[in-house]
Length: 337
Ligand code: ADE
Ligand code: ZN
View (cartoon, helix red, strand yellow):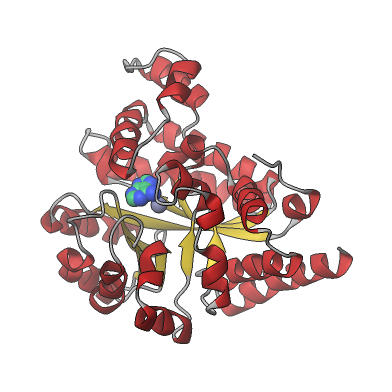
């Protein structure tokens, strides 16, 4: 895999598709297991890395949920989030919008307040100490019932000041967006923005449904959108962004080869696409490695790289002035390089 160039490493950018549980590096997993007295199926970093050979999304999810068992205390969520933010800072991420999966924790008896509290404190400290801004997005596990999601949403209402949006993740096929129509309607009435994973393994029809039934502001992945020309035209006209994750797509076999990744075709069709890392501890790279891999595979031009970074700010949930300030930094970087 090509190492990120100096241009990519210094490129000001936002990350918009990042599961905080997906940043749990093997070393951290073993350390948390030790300090919390949790038994893991894997005894070493090597054994863990060897298990990261996934045939599809479900195989990955099975391991990902098992690994969350080491996250027990509020400080685990703080340490996990802080470690990601330090890495993000080193990768010139100026702003991060971070998913978390509360149901993966509350179903093991971890209080919702500890999950949100630990993550939030790290985000607050990163703003002060690293100058890195962020937003938090609560994801519902779509393979669980809508009633379950509604109960989580009720719990989240007390944390409205800390959570900007709700999303939808986990096993996609057989769990269409419309299953969560009422939950998302309630969330929107309560002032949350909405996003959803769609068109990762599922069909273009799920992308359509996420827009029509859930009124999402962004689509996470959305690879399969290209199967439907009318949908592509709609995504382009409405400027609904797609948060693409190239290395994730490769490792979960959503694409057979990065040379066949839809990113370039999407750019050419006028879609607002961004580059993100999804679950970097499992897929072999953080955001800069994703930029480097997709640039090498598709021979992206300098202009295309800058367009992707610009899209990342434009597609964010920042207010217009904050977006402007970050895009100005990108423009200054462009002028200097
Ligand atoms: N949860 C964590 N990563 C995910 C992905 N790539 N797709 C769906 N759910 C996820
Ligand atoms: Zn994801």
